[in-house]
Amino acid sequence: QVQLVESGGGLAQPGGSLSLSCAVSSVNSRMYSMGWYRQAPSKQRELVALSDSGGSTNYADSVKGRFTISGDFSKNTVYLQMNSLKPEDTAVYYCYGKMYFSGREIWGQGTQVTVDS
Image (cartoon, rainbow, N blue to C red; front, side, top):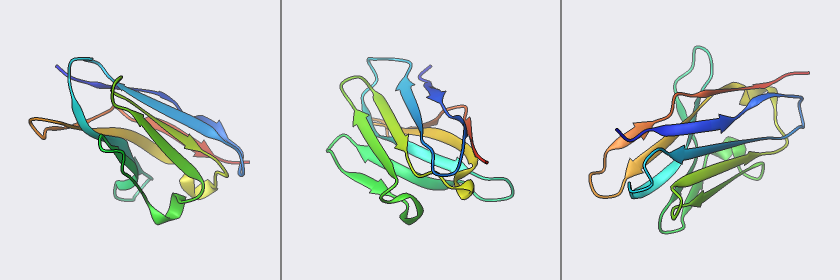
């Protein structure tokens, strides 16, 4: 079964940086898009950033200029560099992937990002 394996996250101070990475468990699975969503307590899950195999990227307005997504679709891996972190960035971050041929959507288990002084 294809899975997304996340790493990174943790605690940062306001203005600090953290990075996340996510890899597909099966190197033989071709991905159409990969990215990150987040869910804060009592809030709906929202898109953070998305990268597709054509090279396009999409960001939530709230993270533009601060977060950078990079996808290596030859390795089925996606990275999220988060700079100038704010307390409102605190959330569980979920890796997302859409498989190329089936269109099936898969999710990682989630990793906590906390921004607090």
